[in-house]
Structure formats: structure tokens, C-alpha cells
Image (cartoon, rainbow, N blue to C red; front, side, top):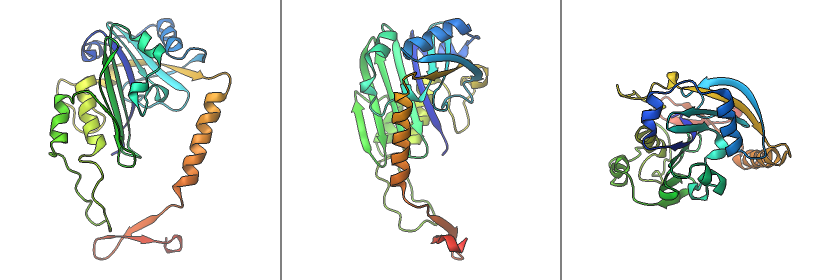
Length: 253
């Protein structure tokens, strides 16, 4: 799977209704919202996009829209590994409304989603095979129940050697697609339903949003450097004559 998302929304009820009737938001109004969620940052208009291709923006980029009854932001900084730690200024920005967070990253099979109602966290789930269940707060939604009941186990991939059992009872990205569909009304991978949101029709304003002190960027680069240091050398596999994947050295390429 190659799905990645970084979504935070404030909605008066079901955001799917707002997205289904989305109109082009005003640039000045949307910029003011971006400044609200990123206080103290430098905000400069950038190239616009759509919900189809901007659900996981690059570093220092925010896509946003102001809809009738909802505000939507696509920004990796607004999605947390522990959603319960959502900063106070974002809780205030969504006060009196439903706050919805959804994030997933296919490289590490990570999923997090959360919902607040009137400032109260009613559901939060964050998990990945490497870190396990990092957060599991509130009662599972109906779309989750088959996963927790063991109806979506992760089967071994044919041909790969020495596979250990998957450390979670289901694949986070599979649940992530169902969560995205239930909470936002669309999917990244798989065939959409006839009533799904047309993400190509949801216009998003683009902004370059940076920390003028440079601290945020420096911390991010330090984190990336640590990840590269701990990754170890690349491993290469090739399908053998018996149909199984076999590791080969760099000299075997």
C-alpha cells in the first residue's frame, strides 16, 4: 500500500456533507485560518491543489479550505502519533465543533485517527507494527469492530522467507482506509463507492508555512538524520527459481 494522509478538520456535524458541496474558498479567509493553526509562523501563499493530490503535503506546506460548516487542513505537523496531545490552541480553534484527525504512513504501516466532540476526546487510535498500540482511547466505532474481532488478519506474503506473524491483529492501513471513508467520505486506495466525495472537485489553497526561528526545521532535520542512522544498509531480494524471494548482496545485482 502507498497511502499517506495528514488531515485535521473542524466541522459542524458531518464533514462529508460540507465536502460534497465544497466551493472554492477565499484566499484571505483561508490564510487567516492557517495563521490561526500555526501561530507565530511565516505564511506565504503557494500553489493550490485539490483533496485528490494534497492529503499528505511536503514539509512546511499547508493546504486548507474554508467550507460551509467546516474547515479542513492538510498538514503533517497537525497529525500526532498520540492524538490526545493535540495542542490547546487547536482545541480552541475547533471549540464547539467536531474535530477530526486522520493520519497514516505506508512506509511504516502507521495509522492514527481521533475525534473530539465539543472539546471532549471520544475516540483515539494510534498504532503501527513497530511501536504497537500507542494510543487506544474510547469505544471503537462500528467500522472498527470486524478488525478487532479478527476478521481481517494479515496473511503471510507468498515467497518471502522467514516471515514472523504480523504483530497486530490487522493491517493499520486497511483499517485506515475504512476510517478515512467513515470519517471523511473518501478513500486513497481501492475503488470508491458511488456516493463518495469527488476529491478532485475539492479545491485547496496552498501555503508555505515556516517557523521564522528555524527551530522547527532544525528539529526535523535532526530527526531525519537519526532515522537514516538507525535504518542500516539496504537489503536486496530477487525471486529465485523456486518462486521464493532470496536475499542477494550488492555484488549480485
